[in-house]
Structure formats: structure tokens, C-alpha cells
Amino acid sequence: MHYPIAVAGLKRDLPLFPISDELQIAAFIMLGDQELTVACASGPSLEKGPPEYATMLTAEAKGIPLIHEMARQAGAARYFVARKKMKLYMGEALEVDVQSITTAGMQKLFLTEEDAALMQGRRILIVDDVISTGKSLEALEKLVEKAGGIVVGRAAVLAEGEAAERTDITFLEPLPLFNKAGEAI
Image (cartoon, rainbow, N blue to C red; front, side):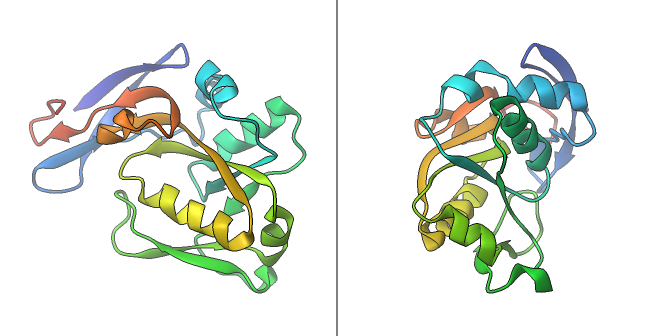
């Protein structure tokens, strides 16, 4: 089963995947789709909707192509990525727990010591491919707060399910959730 969607002027068929016995989600994967990534990064809601910001933050990994292209189009020299694994080169990294709808079990996000220092006092736009439950957003917001940065906006390509009703996020298109028969709910 697939869900057809038009986003940033492009059409894609998203495969449906069960996340429980009663619920399915449409898998929106920008990794490897350069045309979609470029179009979404220049989408009017992402470009004009968020307030003025100094730099951007995303979580590893699916948000990386989007934030990279947004930074490239904006002429920004730098953006930040919260990593899923701690590496030795990260220094005294900041860390938070997150329980994402698409990941089994609890995971952690890490912000390098260097990135945290650079983020202090700066206006940060949080960027993601899809906002669903908001748990990843909350984790990223906690990292910004721990680093002394200021979250000034939250932007995504898609807002899934009830997230589309949120007034504190900017997104290009809503994305429904699906029952086990593949019907939008």
C-alpha cells in the first residue's frame, strides 16, 4: 500500500508501514532524493515561515539532507546536527533521551561540546523531515536549552497526524496516519 502525496510541487508515493497492530505510517524518505530535498528546502513555508534565526539544528539522520540544502540556499556556513551515538571526538557532549515513533526503544541524542559552545546565546531554528509525536522536537529543544541557545522556530517538510494542528511549527504539507487497512485516519 502507498499514499500519494504532492509536496513542494513534486509527487511521490509513500509506502505504508505498520508501527502497531492498528496503526500505519507513510514512510517519507528524502535520503537519496536530491530533487525532493532541493524543492523542499526552498519551499515557501520553510523559507518564509520561521522567524529570524542565526543557525539551524536537526537530528541525525533523515533531517541532514534537508538542513544541508536549506543552509546552502541561505548561504549559511554552518548548521548543527544532534548525533545518535557518542564518539570520542565529541568532548563533553550534551545528551538527552528521546523516544521517536519510528524507533524501537529509547535512544539518545548528543550535541558535541564544540557545537554546544557555538550555540550559546544564538537563535536556533529546529529542522526535521517529519514532525509526528513531537518527541524528537522536544529532545532537540532540550539540547538547545542545555547549550544556552534560544529556540525561535520549528520547521519540517511534513506534519503527521495531530502535529498538523500545532501552531508552533512551520511545515509544507500535512501527512495523515493510517489504520491497518491503509485508510487515512
